[in-house]
Image 1 (cartoon, rainbow, N blue to C red):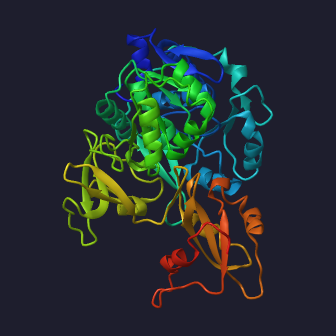
Image 2 (tube, rainbow, N blue to C red):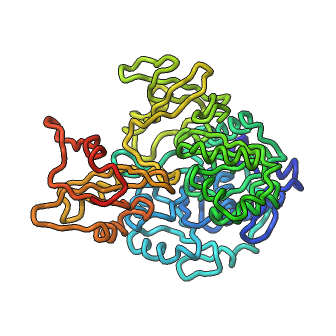
Image 3 (cartoon, rainbow, N blue to C red):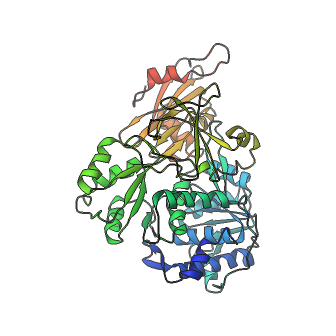
Amino acid sequence: MIYGDWIGRWARGYPDKEALVDAIEGRRYTYGQLACDMNRMAEFLHRDLGIVKGDRVACLAFNRIEYIWLFMALSRLGAIMVPLNFRLATGEYIYMLKDSAPKAFFFDREHQNVVDALKTEFRLPHYVCFDHDDSVGLSLPDIWQSLSPDSPPEIEINAGDTQLIIYTSGTTGMPKGVLLTHGMLTWNAINSTLGWNLGPDDRTILHSAMFYTAGWNVLTLPIFYSRGVNILVRRFDPDLILDLIAAEGVTVFFGVPTMFQMLALSPKFAATDFSRVRFLVSGGAALERSVYEKYKEEKSARIWEGYGLTEVGPNCFMANGKLGTVGHTMPHVDLKLLGVNGHEIPVGGEGEILLKGPHVCGGYLNNPQATAETIVDGWFHTGDLGKLDCDGHLSIVGRLKDMIISGGANIYPAEIERAIDTHPAVAASAVIGVPDPKWGEVGKAIVELVPGASLALDELVMFLQDRLGKFKMPKYMAVVDKMPRTPASEKIQKFILKKKHGSPENG
């Protein structure tokens, strides 16, 4: 089988090559050992849960080795993993579960209460806890020793078969399940390996949460594809990351700008040895020149700025450009910039970034309209604005879509507005991004109240806590007598709100 069995293939050819360092549990795995545990998980999925090709399995957990086993085993069976963002609210989980219809739900002890509450709203055939606890579902450790490490029978898997469904919010306010296919993930890994010259000697830290594309597709899967080593941690911790960079000889590292700032502010930064680091990749938002210069001057380390999306893989450009650009496209990525008139934009002009290649996703789950609107003749319309310089380096200059980027996370105002509008005191709402020194941008809610009503920010946040994840909560709020609207369509004119209320303060 060409797809779905990277770990198994490396285990057969290089069984003793180190594959993963579990810094959470203090264990090390070769490709041979990792394959045995992948096979055990595959037997449990098929034998005990009846999972077959095409079935979906949801997962709600912090980073841990079992998460990796689960993904690799599902890929081996031709089944699909649906990782869930642990920062969401109950209502958001229910929507995603109804949309994806998983056959089983894996979780960790920390999320037992969430799963228990979900069971009253959404029934699934199987609930499985990664830990020694069967109060909410099956306990995986209780079954583990009975499972076989032998490789399961091969399954016919095609490039267009879905491997992973990652939910991302959209301009309509409803989350969309992005269909990441086996072919797409493979070509993202090929692009990354070739574009960044990844190989068996490369080592990285897997700190990004595995519910979104950065956790899998920036470096994790490309490093596995190139037979390198992933170092697994539970979450991003600046002091721990710096310790591991030195102790484990990390050669490549990904982070969002906020993370690089946090590392630089750590008391351990000055003494940390960066000599084995080949490059650092920053994504999710623009990198401040001061941060770039600090790593260059104090550590002789260059931070490369990358660009991508969940739908087209995060590694679309080689990050080999000047500061403020993302460089040239990866080897198997086509690019063009399109103007509002539908004509291609020449060098020096600004246009929407369109990308094409085998790294483009299979569309959106249960949403053919969004798929057709976004992928046209194979070209993915990113909704971001770019500009090419005379050397072919791309700069990201703006956004067509209404979006806030906070700490590298994409937050869509439409989703927040939809939730705010259900408050009985609110007649209309608009959410805009305002500057923040730590996160880059945070949300500010502008609300028009019904006559005679009152509403404070803390009351609004309390109302939203079961409807939105904490990271989406507006940090500031302003109340207006009446929203500015277009005369014809009655659409709220956000550009007017941004001029008047675009500062990081209440009111």
